[in-house]
Image (cartoon, rainbow, N blue to C red; front, top):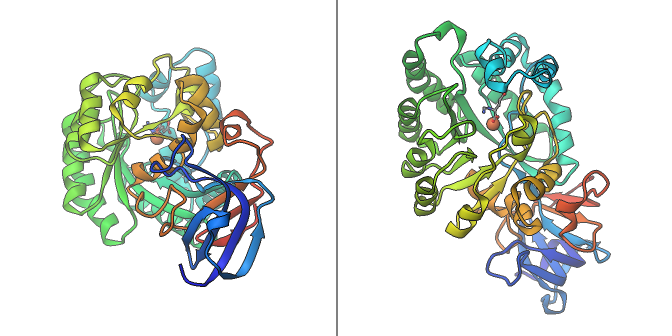
Length: 408
Ligand code: NIG
Ligand code: FE
């Protein structure tokens, strides 16, 4: 470390989430963190801090510092809402029934196609701000409510514009293979050709997506169709992730993992063979307890087996107008524990280190470590277990994004 740094945070306990340090949180009590530019340049016990001067010194007052939280799966740019559908589901209709009757994702597709970019931007802002207020410093945003070139581009441009105006990292994903648009009714293979030959290349040309996602499910696309989308994405050098096995066992997870997917998401219905493929290929599991809760699912993902196989387990909001209109990653940590049996430390790993894995950005963030981005949140709590335990009142006292002190 150089003798001079931009920012020095002292008198904190650090939940580094560094797996090479002892304990589930990789905790360093009475720590100091030095930042230069957008990176951590030193972190460790305060008494070992090398002699240095800093432009800004923050006294952490004995609070806990964590990596900035990462929401690795959201659909937060969309038009309209689906409160009516919520009422129908409360009345007994299922998510699948609503979808098959032309509601569900297709209802949001109609609203998103009709909305201006400005309108989409204004509606997305409060959702993004809600996540940021909880210490989220990286958010993934998917398209997938356009299902035609122009609207997919519109959604992705709105996501990129949010990144220019808010102190948060935004990673974008093209989810053009989210549902079959009505104009392609009965012609799913032709729509997949459009996605592979036109939509993805155009998105790649404008560098609007950092990854490609797809919905492999009985109510969406088949394993064979998704295999084609993966091949097209990989030809464009884009990493892939798959919404897989939320509603039924399809073989999507196995196929995606063997094709080198970064992550598979939902995965309530995966089998032992799927888990073996994930472990072998380093594919992360992204669990979405908010969608499980909203849809009143009963089949929980096989957490114990994922854990035993050493698969990184991420947690995310899935923030979207249908299956999870809940803009709180902290609530997902709580649900991850209460509904899926994660430990509080696994829940924090799920929204930091493992979420970074699921996005393919673990070389730059997700852990407090020298050389990684200085994305951090300072919490007024006595133990990091409180992050999964408490919902609502516990907010970050300070947030740092790329070393910049952002008002919490
Ligand atoms: O992750 N599964 C597909 N996509 C979203 C739901 C989108 C919607 O219902 O609008 C999900 O649950
Ligand atoms: Fe989703």
